[in-house]
Image (cartoon, rainbow, N blue to C red; front, side):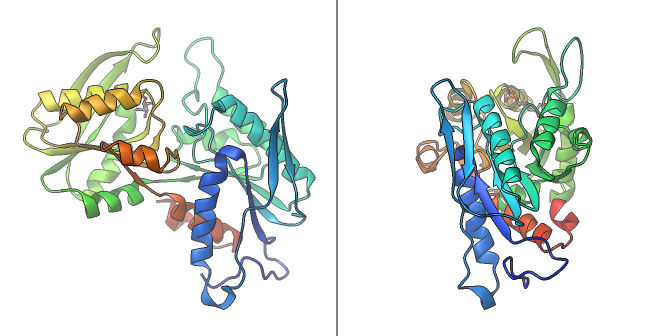
Length: 348
Ligand code: R5P
């Protein structure tokens, strides 16, 4: 990139600066590493670093965030990863931490506030089925009312969530290209069928199959919403016999969807089954059931992104899991926004 993030003229956005809530610090460090790598030769002396801030949890559980540097007039980015496997903080603690952090940045008089949340929490509560709240919309409102102007997220579960913001803009990034490039470089992509793990995943699977020029299959999954994480029935539309299969999904939570889909595909004669997901949460017993499925040769590998960062030790110890970094894409988009360049090409 030829623009400097720091040398500003009239009409430019403010200088690019970034802070993070505690659970967002590891991902923010990787974004900054990539932003610094992207800087062109002329300003190698100027390195971006994380703005100093603190996150305190008081004895009664209340959270306070404070910014320790002058960010007045900046184009400021706040990074948070709600579901952080390396922390004891709950998603709800981390949500409050983000909201208080946004407000601290707002009170510090940044010109523009962008929230970088690769995991949009409560995204699966985006519509009403019975007497329930549309919590994904509440999250949008909380973020907006705290002072954010823009949200950057990753493969949000329901695209309609972008419309839940009244004033703030939402950029939804996709991990598909990063995951597919990694897959093509490191795994056998011959004789492949792309399979959606459920009807909701058909669009993503279609993109994969177009890009890879392969056939497409779909697992038709019906859930029993009266019981937690219970799948009622599954059937396959398409043919996977004697084929390698790649199943893409936006997230793995309990692992139930994936392992059940993989078992069905094995029964239908599939050979190696690879799984990619943007958000590898691995909640509850997911790690155990995925490990068991790997040991029993039901699945060959799960490939996830570092938008949910499990740490180097986890990757070393869990041969069934492979991680690819999505931080370069975030750095690219952030630098384009700051330089007022188009981002649409980067969102495909
Ligand atoms: C469902 O619509 C999503 O795309 C995921 O397939 C699902 O949320 C994964 O959840 P779990 O791993 O608990 O089955």
